[in-house]
Image (cartoon, rainbow, N blue to C red; front, side, top):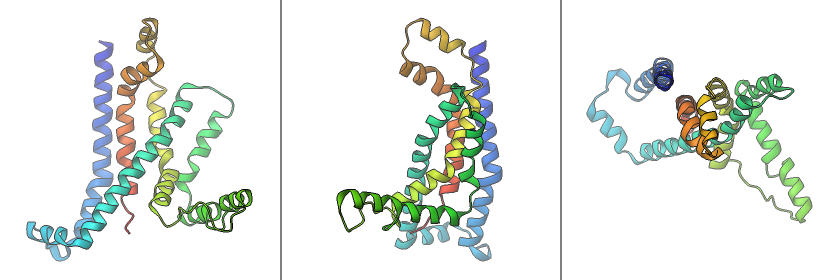
Length: 220
């Protein structure tokens, strides 16, 4: 009965998250794209084929999809450890850490760009330290104006989404299944893959979908 209730909860969260994203993001985004790409209600199969047949449009679409997927994966990878920390550990300053973790998501874009230039620029903080250590006169780290910079910026912006959504569900998980598996000799990795991960997967998928929407906007 408890397992069935857990499955029903995951299904409910997945459907709710998918409906929320569809109504507030994907459907409005589709309407905006339709108006931008097919003015004067010229939407048709022929117009779609004509649009996608152009090499320039294909390059833009492929690049945008590729960087959005990479940015989403990177954001998930850096957000999950933080979600685990907030969900499973109690320590002084936990509330402060939660509050501070949301700051990147609300920062103006110009401040993030300025911060990246100051830290990662050819004459930035990181390169000056490395050049002083190695005695070089040329910058060692060159990531600005590249795919790496896009992925780093998206990860910096969007990891609070993963952190909040996943940690909120993670800290509410029932520990009875985990305790039973531990008593039977299951290791930490097996516990995570077979018990914890399936239960937090709806939150991970919801966060990934939301992050993908925010990342799907960079063109070459």
